[in-house]
Image 1 (cartoon, rainbow, N blue to C red):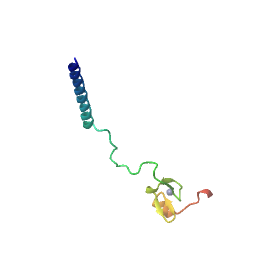
Image 2: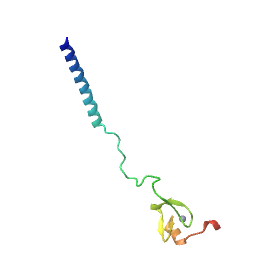
Image 3: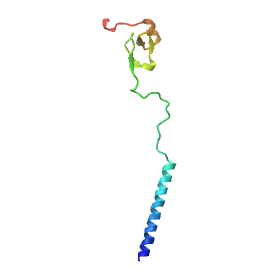
Image 4: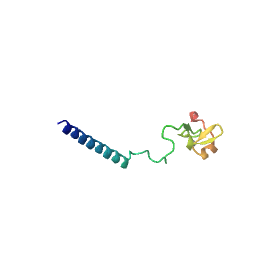
Length: 88
Ligand SMILES: [Zn+2]
C-alpha cells in the first residue's frame, strides 16, 4: 500500500516538473516586450524649456539658439535681437 502511494507521488512530481519545464521553455521562446530602440532622444518633460528673447515662445533648450545671454527660437530672431514684450 505504501509502495503504491510512493509511485503515485513520484508520478505527480514528474508531471509537475514537466509542466514547469514546458512553462520555462515557453517563456524563453517569447521574451517579454523590451523597451523600443532608443531612437527618440531625451524623454519628454526632462528637458529644460527656454524662452525666445524676441517673440517669447517657449522651446526645448536643444532646439533653441543660444547667442549671448539670450536664447532664441531661430537664428532670424537672434539677428532681430531682444524685444521687450511688455511694452507692446
Ligand atoms: Zn522667436
